[in-house]
Each structure stands twice: as C-alpha cells, then as structure tokens.
Amino acid sequence: MNDQPLKNIGLRGIKVGYAYTSFVDPEKGVYYLGNPIETLYNLDVTAVYWGMMNRKWPSAQEFTKFRGELAERRQNFPLDICKKINSDKAHPMEKLIEGMVLLGAKRGRYTTGTPQYEESVIDMIAWTPLLCAAAISGKSPKIPKGYRTYGQILADEMKMDDKKARFLDQFAVIHADHGGGNLSTFIAKAAASGYVDLWMAVAAGMIGLYGERHGKANQESLAQLLEFQERINKGAKLDDLVRETFESGKAMFGFGHAVLRQEDPRAKIFYALADQLMPNSQLYGIARDLRSKWPRFVLEVANPKREKEGKSLIQNPYPNVDQLSGAVLWELGFQDPRTFTVLFALGRAPCIGAQVHHEALEKVPIYRPSYPYGGANLPLPTGDALTALMPH
Image (cartoon, helix red, strand yellow):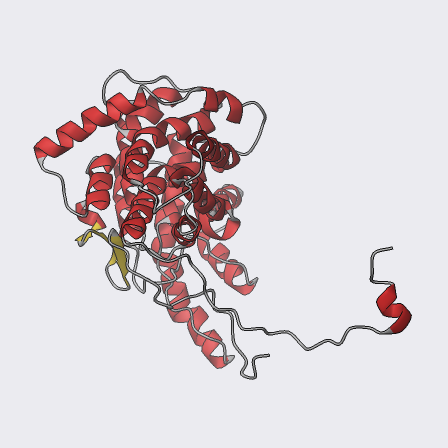
C-alpha cells in the first residue's frame, strides 16, 4: 500500500513522449509544424494532413499528386457502412464511431510485427469527410468524381453554398490538432500501442471526444448564448447576466483554457470569420460583447472577491475556440448541436491518425502507466461468512 498520498491529476503535465505534428504555447496558442494557426487556417486541410503525416510541407507537385490520390481512394469508400450506421436513430457521434469500428473490422487484426499505418492514414484522410457526412445527414453520401475539399463534400450533402463550404474547410483546419496529450489523441495512441487497426484506435479516441468534458464545449457555449439571447429579448441586460452567472456559481462557457493564458488565437479567427459571415447576427453580437465584458468582470470584480474569500483566482478569463464556433455553425444552418462534435472529429481524426503513425514508426512500447495501490488491506471474512461468498 502506498504510504504517501498521491493525487490523481489525470497525467496533467507528465511528459510521456513527443508529438511531431503540433504544440500549444501558453501565450501564443497552437502551432502546426512550427507555424501559428493564424497563418494556416486558409490552407486546404488535406495539405495540413500531408504535412503532419510526412513531417514536412508538400511541394505544389506533391500536393497535386496527393489530391488525385485522395479522389481515387474515395471511389473505393464502402458505402454499405453508411447504410449500417444510419439504420437507427443513434447520436451522430455514435454513428461516426460505429462507422470507424466497422471500417477497422473490414481490415482485420494485426497478428505479427509492428503495424504499418501509412496506407490507413491516407485512407482516413480520403474517407473521413464521407463518413462524417453520412453521420450528419443520415444518408449515404455521393462520391465525388474529382477532388473535393472537406468543406465542399459536406456542403454538397447539406445543400450549402460555396461561402459556407469555405468556412467548413477553415473549421477543419482550426480543429485539426492540439498537441499530443489531449484526451482523444492520447486514448487513440494508447489503444494503438496494443497493435490494433488504425480505424479502431481512432474510434477509441472518438469515444473520448464524445464525452461531455472533451467535445461538447461549443454546444454548451451555444446553449448559454441562446439563453442569454432569449432573456435579453425579454428585457434583461447582458451586464446583469454576467454578474448573475458568476454569483450563481455557474460557468461562463467558452472562456478559459487548460494551457493558454491569453485569448485563444483560434477564437480571434472565429471572430474575424463571423464578422464576414454574420455581422448582423444578434447571437454573434452577444458573443462579441461577452468577449470584453466577461474578462473585465473577472479581473475587476470576480477575482478580487475570490481573493478576499481565500479562493484560487481565475487564471484565464479570455475566450477559447469554443466560445463562438458553435454559434457560427448554428447560424450557418447546423441546427442540431449534436453534429458539432462530428465536425470537430472531421478535422481532428486524420491528425490523430498521423500521430499514431509516428508512434508506430518509433516502435513506442505498449502504454502502461503506474497506478500504486491506494486501497486498504482488508482481511477476508471467516467461517460461515466466507462460505457464503463461495459458489453454491
């Protein structure tokens, strides 16, 4: 039994390996291959995936060839899987996870040697938008004859215009990666270390993303914004709602970050995109006002009060990526917030695949963290009490 008390911190801050795709700077936000997200979000997300898989940026010729390869591989996407996942009224994320498991089952188990994931990663880059489109729309997607971007494939299924397709491409890039230790990525790499098919490993990660503590933040932020909108339309003032939220002990969703100590650069991108896409939206106006009102309230009112009460201060009162992303999706026509996590997965899954690929190349051992025993030494019952516990 462990004599020293050990606090379970969820492995936070424990260095267990390297991520070769991205990192998060506490002051500057997420970087892909050493580049800040502000310089990347207008790229085709498949160029980002090629770069993360190969750990270098593609040349124009390499990317042209890759686009052609993706178009060809999409012709082999097994549409029968879409029929299976849409046979009931499951949650869109459950459909996506089931689809990934079925794709993994088609390939079968690895039985000998280290898995070679490169071909599977390319398939994942090609097929993920088709699988996500099926999970969101509830029907089998049309396979494009030529190359289409992620946003274009989804927009085709949702009957959306080019402007919305462009936003979906940007959304995918913004959500593509976030270091190596976030829950969904870590789970996938841990599962893959047992040598399973890539689709199975990433499905495990998607189960983590499905959980409320990981992939639901922009849904919660949207719900709060819609509540504020309803109350404002009945005469409430946003300043009063801000104070009420704090005094009731409720969270202000979409603010703060586990690593960042400044406003999330991804949030700044969403504000800029919302200015273009929905400048007159009341919902956006409320979110935009909260961008300044909540941090000011925390610094001038909430933290001084918490300090007097001997409570820990709010370290980061600034917007994160989830503060506005759900509201933009809502205004663009995604009226079922349950699909938001699938759109998160749309960008994230192939990058998780790339990280799994890198660890397989390095022959990373099976994940096996240490868990000291924290329970008591409990003697077995004796006599009739012990007999009662035996099969009978």
